[in-house]
Amino acid sequence: MRDTSPPGARRPVLDWRIRFAVLCLIWGFSFLLIKVGTHGYAPLQVTLGRMVFGTAVLGAVLLVRRERLPKGVRTWGHLTVAAFLLNALPFTLFAYAELTISSTLAGICNATTPLWGMVLSLAALSDDRPTRRRVAGLGVGFAGVLVVLGAWEGFSGQDPAGTAMALVASASYAVGWVYVRRTLSGAGGSNVAMAGSQLLLGTAQLALVTPLATSFPSSFPVGPLLAVVALGALGTGVAFLIQYGLVAEVGPTTATLVTYFIPVIATAAGVVLLGEHLSWNTPVGALIVLAGAALTQSRPRRPRP
Image (cartoon, rainbow, N blue to C red; front, top):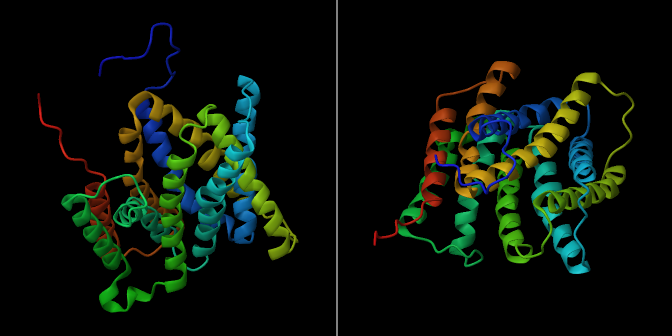
């Protein structure tokens, strides 16, 4: 690959492929960390802790770089909505979902985000025009979800409520990204400043709700606490920084390929480290979901001049 960076630009210390692999591992293990965190704390507390530590990481980066937060009431209003759709709501739903479903299933449900994006495009809520191939990918993807859940056996004992929450969380990501593209694409400010502001607002939202919905922990078990710290500092803070760096260096198309590795890593981590049961239909269905998601992301080839 030819280096297209401008003269004098500061090159990253690590090759983008290494950073890509690290991002896959961080986000893949996030579902395991959520599961461990809920063993000691309420789901809302896990999510609030995740947001606090993630905001702290991005806040520290902003201080070091001496970057300012975005200005304008309108921008902060859109960031408030984005924080709810992309952080507060999906993070909380995944935490509640993993009370009754495995981290493996949660990671696979996360891979349905491109499918929900396709649903939005069919509903004319997205700027992307659906093609036959992408519509076919939608059908293939959701067929894969039915295989994962073992629909022919009454969903193989999976908890319907927990599964529904994980799927709604994935749909919230799709809605949130469409909203961000439409309202914040020209807002100005660096990606880190926008992300840090978004996490700050999401933290404020959860800080208002969590004390009303949960009681203060009577103890602070170390294992779940460390899981929450890692989930926030790595899975939210550091992961955001790596993602933005990848998008800037190799483009959004390559950077978003991380979506297809997350369920693989989440499944391996859940089975090996948590001893979660894995039946044949789970990996087979996951592969079908990923194939469908890949089709929904495909674009028609431009004719050569």
